[in-house]
Image (cartoon, rainbow, N blue to C red; front, side, top):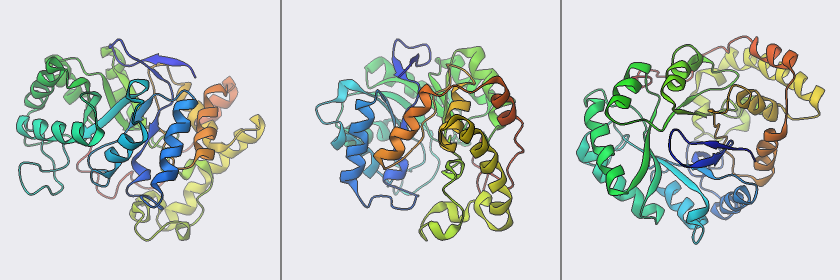
Length: 325
């Protein structure tokens, strides 16, 4: 797999990472077969995947613990990214936004313990806390970098102005935001900003939460606890309307003897070497399919056709208020 730089650090990572959330939380089948998930992580390493994305909120906590089991004895082979800021460690441990310096400290110690490591390569603020200046948060993260507890820090779902304020305190390594063929919002302001500053851009949900694989046609395929059941793009008439996007992606896939998911990932990779998508899966077969996108080349005509797809119906989340602050 092609290797790319991680921000302005000296680290290189495979240009397709692995998002681990669905192994433990929020999606159909989560936390039901850890042994299978661990085998998938092992296979990912064999295929050249080096960038693994988790968070304390996934579970909560059990996703970090799962990764620790999977990489026992192999820590030096991978780059670990995890996230903080959505659990109130200073309070009752419930969900909520807290970017305070104290919460940063409490969070990182917990993640280090659960991950079974003495350092985290990339430590994201999962969502911006409107009650804490980002300068305070980054000040605490800068101290952790100096202490060797984290290698660099990132921001998830941050607005361009917030990214610039954070970067002025200490260079940001990576910014993570939803980006895919049906979530093009970062192209307007976020991508230009991170490119100006030399920051790696990490698209999460690069397969449209599974929709762009072409396998989801009905909510009946999802467990009652699957959060996509309440996602606007999967509801009612939106679901039917959005199938048109997958059908157009599938048409390109047939031209290339590929899958729709591979085409969606190849389109993202074609947007630049500073973009590292993190598709998630619990299954080795889907992992191998996703990694295969690294070798897929889209023609100019295919890139234009995909770039001209209509926007999907429905917001990315039912409540967009915590995003892009």
